[in-house]
Length: 336
Image (cartoon, rainbow, N blue to C red; front, side):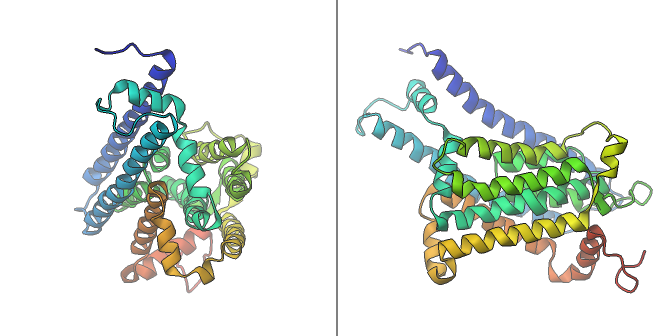
């Protein structure tokens, strides 16, 4: 016999279901866009296409194994605190799931776990700084330069699924060579006002996370951070003449991000004592909780993917691209 559910229970189920529907829609949008780019490419896809596709699948498997484990842990933790018998014989039906979702803020719960303590934040901060800094700029500039559609969807997919998955999919989108007649002059020499303001504001929210953990503004700070990452990647109206004058060079923004991120990492490393903790301790922290393992493996897979993107076999080409993006055009280093 199915018990009628309350409005709060139904709301929890709808939000939970919408989360997975949103992920599915984003995957379809991004994969269709990538497939279209590869079909339109004048050449057949290089071997690196398979590498990034494989990395996307591997990182998805690793991060979501632990994400599902976290959801299972959260459900059992709720029922424990609610006094539900561990030996309950009834199946885990819709009502029990609805009660869990009604009473549990999964997003805030997961983030509280991965930010609780200097060593846990040592892992989590790496992904936050990479995402709000380098990757946001990279998405906007490279996406515009290469004509990648729906760049905002990669960022949103990274937030809902895993940054490593979205990063590999974006690298996969960049693999097909840009046709010369369609290739735009590098839009990465300068960035719009909305991008650099969003990036710098996002970095401020990341630095605030350790201080906000046990305060009322912890959740609002996280929501602002996530919203600011998507905003500059949306297809916004054309900038006003005044906003055009307020563009910042990408080189300046990259340097600001690097300096601010370095300052944040020095502070976290000093507080956490990670230099003296040793690899064994850091590895134990990564495995200390399913939520922590999910974000920790996201860090690991993202790092692997970025290192492959700048792999030694193409160091010269990638270096030229990075220097060009940063605005370092010097005779003898990069030919105009």
